[in-house]
Length: 442
Ligand code: NAD
Image (cartoon, rainbow, N blue to C red; front, side, top):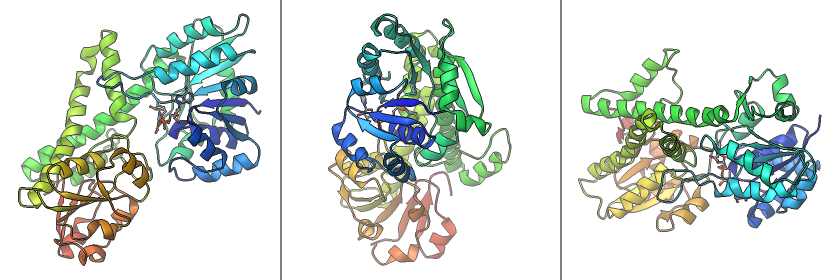
């Protein structure tokens, strides 16, 4: 059954959700306040890099199921189902989440609704937000118009966003238990196709749904920081964290995924989400429960300093005047997202210590230039490595993992590589006469 859907916010989450909902056969309008972004999307061009998404966007625009608009009135008039996918960044100078954008969607949309509608929140929000928004909608919606707020947290991974949206591991829905609403019925229509594949559909209250998302991210961040803490111990003991991760990962209770030691996590989600979670826990009197997340954050940030330290050691104890090649700028491969990117943070620290840094990333150059205009950017791996005293691999793009040491041996000044993601084959580099170092490996 076809639904008429509006998606507010057309960033990584919203644009993906809008295109995927159209792919499922629904009629969709994507709404944003950024007119440049809308113009690109309307012409079938993605304002960011995400594998497989451009094809979906173009196909569904062409087939007439997907369009974009800056008008809330247009969206309110067109759709019966509304998804909120705007950003919830970290507040400036605080741990808490900035809910300005989520609030403004509700403030603008609710008064314009003239027939029954369901608003599904997808953005990651602190527990208690949905209930507040539901109360606000009750005040703002015209009298007699039944508008329900439900929460449907998003778990997509950048780089796999399309597959994760069309075939998620599970669909979680939080509904307002104090009213007999239609949210579950509407969600079943929207997700009819994935649900027919047998994807688990978990329906709960609003607070639990919000917490499922923050708890999932807290767990993932903890898993990464756990292996990075083991990496610190391995370094002190002369042991090998990659072997250790493989060996403990065979235990099905532990699992090998998300156990890659390296320079740690970044991006627009994990760092700000664990901080917002700690801040919210404090507000509701549960701060003690999450004190461990502060350590998770500390371990993560220490990885960046450690990487700078190893780079400094490789250039004889001082980075002044050294030439450093940085391969990778995105916070993870297959994405152009540089929000809180460990790679750019490390590149910036190294430059501040007096080195000349040259950065190359297959997709994240434009975003990097915008956020870090003072770094030097190269147009290829070879150019970045020209005259380098040391090469740092900071994002595990396939093209870096597959790099042949001999291809760049001729351009560097010294054959030294530091593997910030434990993604290279040490044997291959050492046998090509390179000095190879990694975090947590002898
Ligand atoms: P983003 O910054 O890429 O996109 C947010 C978009 O919202 C921007 O295009 C912005 O212009 C738009 N916007 C802001 N105010 C608006 C308004 N009033 N009306 C309409 N549009 C407005 O952010 P994102 O990465 O897509 O994240 C969005 C939310 O999804 C966040 O809460 C994030 O935590 C969550 N999330 C993100 C991912 C991910 O991998 N990116 C995964 C799961 C959940």
